[in-house]
Image 1 (cartoon, rainbow, N blue to C red):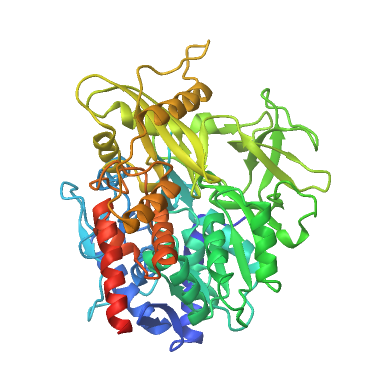
Image 2 (cartoon, rainbow, N blue to C red; image 1 turned 60 degrees about the vertical axis):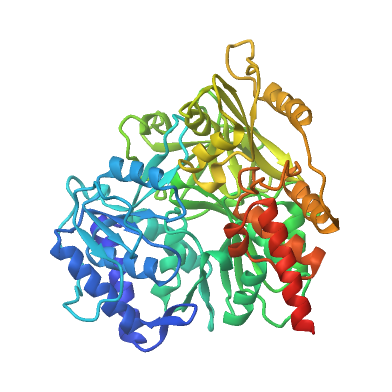
Length: 598
C-alpha cells in the first residue's frame, strides 16, 4: 500500500528525475514566456525555501492565489517541495467567497501573485509568487509527517457548491492525486512529441493532472490564459500553433472547438487524446468529434470532487450506433462503483439506483465538521463509500450509465451546483422574503433561473448584482423574476415544476422592448434576444445584468462578427456591456474596418 509519506516524496522525485534528464528542455510556456526544467526547478525551489522559512512544513496548508499562466505551476511545485498542501484560489471567484474559504480553512501562509492577496485581515505570513532573482533553493522534501496519521496529509482543498447555503471544502490526499496520475500514465502513456494544454483553474479538482501530468513525464505544457480558453477562435489557434496533443475539456469547450474548427479548412494536426468530463457528453458531440478528428481518442470521464476527480472512463470510439446516452464507462484508478437502492442494498446489473464509490480515489472528507457523515458512509462490511447522489445503472456490457440525480444538484457549464446554495444567498439579499431556483433551458443549453418574493424597494438588477458579489459566474441565475408568491407542493416544500411554469408566465407579462433607432440597433437587439431569451428594455440595459456571462459574451462577439464582419473581443464586451456600449463598439469597428479598407 502506498503511504502518504511515499506519495508526498514521489511528486518531487519524479520532477527531480526530469530536471536531471532534460535540464534545458522546455517544461512549461505561457504566451511569450517559457521555463526550462532547470529554471522551473530553481524558481520553485526558492519559493519553497521562503515557505519553509515562514514555518511551512508537512501538514501545513498554503493559500495559493494564482491566475492561469506560469504562476500556478511554480506555486504548486513550491508547495510540494515544502511537503505541504494548498487551497487553490481563482481570481475569478468573488472576493467574499474566497474570504469565506480562508476563514474556514485557516491557512498557515498565503502564496499569491502580485495583486491577488485579497485577505488583509488574515494573520498569516506572506510569500510573493513572482520571479526570485537570488536566494537559497529548497531541494528536498521536508521530512516529517502531518499531525495525526499519515492518511490525513492533504494535497489540496477544493470547494464545491453546498446544499446548506455555503460552499463545501473537500480535503484531497496526496495519495489520491498520485493514484489518479498513475492511472493516466499507465493507461494512456504519452507518445513522442506530446504537448499538454494547461487551461483549468487552479481551484478545480482536476487541475493537478494538467499542472503535473505532463511535467512529471518530461512532456512540455502550454498554459493558456482565460481569454484563449473561453474564445473558441483563440483556443483553436493555440492548439494549432503549439501543436497541442492532449486536452482535458468540458463538453461545452469541445462543442465550441468543433464549432470553430468546422468553419476552417482541415489541417494535418490532430490531438492524440481529448477527454470530456464534469458534465454529460452529448451523443451528437461525439459523432462530430470523430468526423473532425478521426485519428484522435475521445474519452468520456466520470467523477466528482469527493472522489478526487475521475473514477470511470469510456472510449467513445465504441459508442453504439443507436446510443441515446454516452456511457461513462468502467471504473478506473482502483475505484469500485456499485449501484444501491434506498435501503443501501447493492443492485444487480440493469437495475437503476444511487451510485456509491469506494477505493483509493476517495477524498478525506469535508473541511466543515459534521458534513462528511451524510455522504461518506460505511457499509455493513466496514468499507467506506461516498454516496454520489447520481442515479444510474450498469448496462449489459458492463458500462456504467448516468441517468439523473436523487436531489436538487444540477450541472451547469461543467460545474455541479446545489440550487439550495443559490436560494440561501438570495434570502440574504435586501428586501427578499422568499426565493426559488430551477434549471431551465435556452436554445438547448441549461440555464439557471430564479424567482423571488420581496418586501420594499428591490429590482431584479440590484438582486443579481448582490449575487454577483457573492457567487461565481456559473452560479448566477440568468434571470431574477419578482413573483407574488412561490408555489408550494403538498409536502410543504418548494414546487420547482410549478416554479418553472410561473417563471414562464411572469417573463411573458413583464416582457417589454424598446424601438431600435436604426438597422444596426435592430440587429444587435435581435442577437441579444437570441442569446438571453429577452430583448434589451432600453439602451442602458446591461448584458450581464440581464443574464449574460462570459461564455455567452463570447457567443455574442461571434454573432456580431458574423452579422457585421468585424470582430468584437471579449475584453471589449466586458468594458462596454450595455446595449449602447455594444452598438458603439460595432459602429467603431465598422468605421475602423472601412478606414482600413480605404
